[in-house]
Length: 392
Length: 97
Ligand code: SF4
Ligand code: SF4
Image (cartoon, rainbow over all chains, first blue to last red; front, side):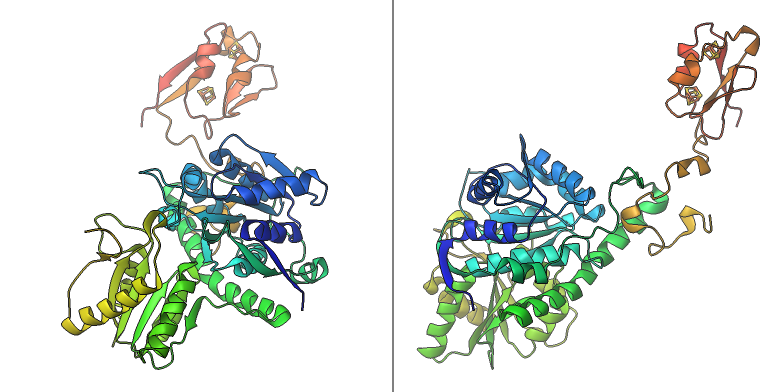
């Protein structure tokens, strides 16, 4: 086993991108994603990474350039956050429709306003329906591993879709964590060079991005939806392959101490690590039957796995890091309620919104949410969502 | 072509609905929604070729005698050729249907 290296998570991701031997990077710096692409530009300038680094004037251009390089058959990477993602919006929809396997790190940051550079998941939620695969990393090692696996998933001919690897801004992007890196030989064996199925090539011309008249538009969208849904099988296959090779296994939904649990918390991203601490306290010091589900795969949503994992559970407390203003629950909770609605014996789903714009979510907050959710279940409280940690 | 494009199921199209045969749009009648069509009075034509160069749809073809013919399967009726023609020998005529 490789030795552990203490390095900033952003730089660990850059190392993964370098090991993936990408051909093209187009990105615009935005906090808190900046260190990733800054380091990549250094690697390219120093000749350590043989890739085109294309500086652009905006994120809209960054994603447009990525569309072009990916269409030309280049292994393509970019990274952004928050407002940068918002500026890419128009092109984000086109990438999966063109079936271009771009890998993007999304250092999650609140969308303005008020202006915030701090972490929550409002940026990702704003692009929920663009058709990208969306995966969450909870720590530096996962960010490194999932970045590498994402290239393999995205480029699989059964998938050919873009992926965003989500890491919480600052709480993950800017911290120094121990990483077990892989060697270039190990990565080369796991991730062979990208073989495009179709590419822009003057010797064999194709037209991409054609107009979709009403007679075919619907069929195009159906094909795209099926591709995204079916990517889940490949994602699981790649997770298993990676685990078998390197000993670190990933699941579309991770669980923590869920055995005999009556109450489950459900989180996405780095707050899961705090939630695990809270579970330990509740289990070990209070003898409570609580556990944690950590949603790793946000899109395609792992419906079957979720239904299986909440069987027999009385209360499910879903913690969202974004608001769906005027809606019926946090974005994740809404999804989960809808996934469980048609199942028998579904748990009571409490929707909590916490940690907006960098607000800390503490061990005590998680314990309070578990207790509150149990109380709401016992009383059969009808609610849409509750905000936790806001001054009332 | 085996099946018309608007009869195919979602499974039968190429990846991302790419067009993999260059120029295959010629197989479709793209002039269906024209409301006016260009009609040329060849007696006034000086064979300059300006209409041919101006047509955005490649719907004007060189005839054997050096004048130009209109491909009504693909002409959209935009009228650019009639505007550009030096001698004014192209007129735009209402489609009767
Ligand atoms: S009317 Fe327009 S499309 Fe038709 S032949 Fe003239 S220029 Fe071409
Ligand atoms: S532009 Fe007019 S004159 Fe010139 S070739 Fe065309 S029809 Fe003839």
